[in-house]
Image (tube, rainbow, N blue to C red; front, side, top):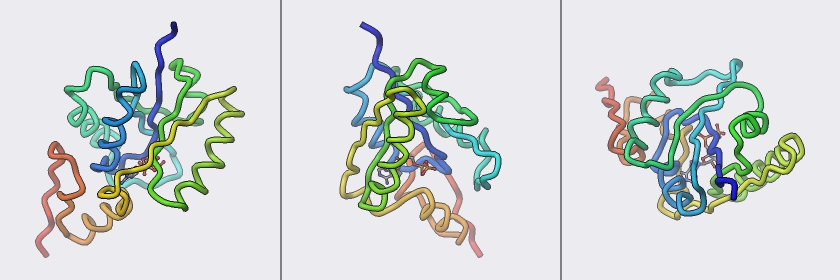
Length: 158
Ligand code: ADP
């Protein structure tokens, strides 16, 4: 049987506890999970690609089934390139669902049957996103409650 490979795509700007929890819960479902940063040249990121990749490497260093990567262009084409038949995504609320539903249907067409597997986030991780974490960091606040231990960002004292 072919190995079950999933791609967990995202910006991970930065990776949060919400992302980590999702990957950990998905591990029993797959033989390999590729946590992959999708690089969109028209999008502005707070942290460099190198920094985000390093954080992913650090956070998943002990997880043998997790690989870290990055890709450009379409997620579905990247899945085909690496032999992944599954995409992993998280659902926090109804707006996530509306957005993700369309994207998953598109990916199934463009990726010739790629299935998106959704996990509902744990309640304690449902109320935040990388966007909120970036706002805290930009505002000089302490984002550590939302970040894995491997990520250290000094709050700016203003
Ligand atoms: P994107 O730029 O594609 O939105 P993100 O890095 O923000 O990428 O998120 C990647 C995936 O992780 C998405 O499926 C998103 O729903 C999920 N996710 C983000 N934050 C959380 C969280 N706090 N709990 C569970 N899932 C989350």
